[in-house]
Amino acid sequence: MDTTPYQEFAKEKLGFEFSDINLLVTALTHRSYVNEHKKSTHDHNERLEFLGDAVLELVSSDFLFRNYNEPEGIMTSWRAALVRTESIGAAGEELGYAPLVRLSKGEKHGSDRAHAVILADCFEAVIGAIYLDKGYDEAKKFIEKHILVKINEILEEGSWRDPKSYFQELAQKHDGETPSYHTLKEEGPDHDKSFTVGVYVGKAIRGVGTGHSKQEAQTAAAKEGIKFYKNQKKPSKP
Image 1: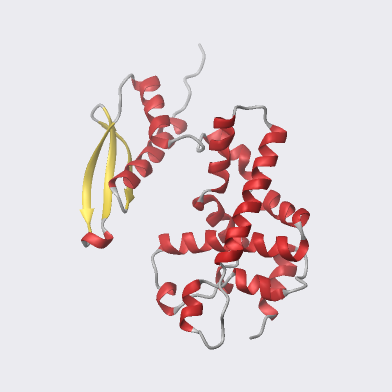
Image 2: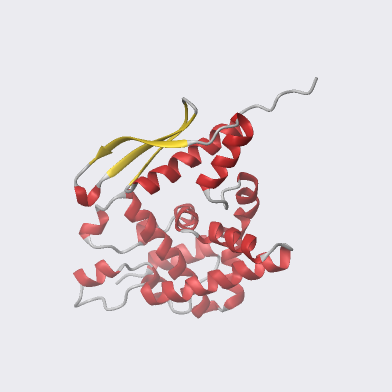
């Protein structure tokens, strides 16, 4: 196969050339593609993803340990926010490697949610590929540039906290009431249902969220509710 697009991506987006460009190609190859091209392709990215996940966790843990004097539980929550699927999937979108990801025809037409997971998995696999080809320091630089820079935003927004617990704190602080969740809509077949849930404080709706389970939809609604309170203007001092 022509690996030129992968080398160009490495030079333009990563700032270096791979000694073994096949590592990057494999990092961006989904299992479904191998199943569809068994004669020409034998390696997919799951082993590299396994390795990259470990490197990502180590670099993130080291960064938090060295820069913040907080209890283990707090730093564990911060790390989880840094490396969760949504965070690394978004970093993958920003990096722009989606067109290079090799998928089966079926996966190409999958849901947005499935694509987000695939991009996140590829991001971890790319870390593994960089680690093998260039070593720990280069992998660390990559993680610092694309993941660790988000720590201030995570701390300012409070997105490291459990959304439902955090929203309940805000609702009780601002309105003196405990929120309640109500399912507004259910759509789709049993194997692929979509739920829409509203979170209410008293009779006022503070957020609406959707998800493939009621719990997921409630969490999405809580996140919207947090935004509601965060966006409220603070009263001016007399």
